Length: 87
Image 1 (spheres, helix red, strand yellow):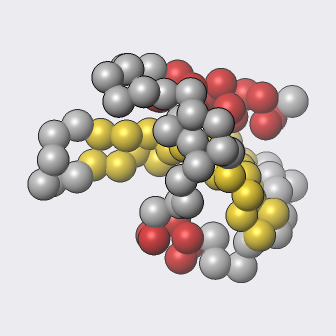
Image 2: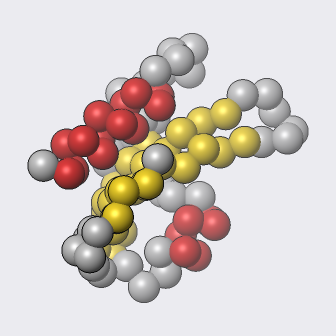
């Protein structure tokens, strides 16, 4: 999902790992220079590719764990984060 206007950008990212089964969803919001990064596992820095993309941004990220390894709703949690950021 991607929503953009002139003052901010809301995006989700799907990570796939060929070495391990499964996928994981992340989300971030760019508001000019600051960027808010969300990972439902909490307290994780953005992956290197996203850090490189957001190189000129001051990135903040969540610390609260909302998703446990056997849960399936991480995509929903990312959408919840984005909707809350849009308001």
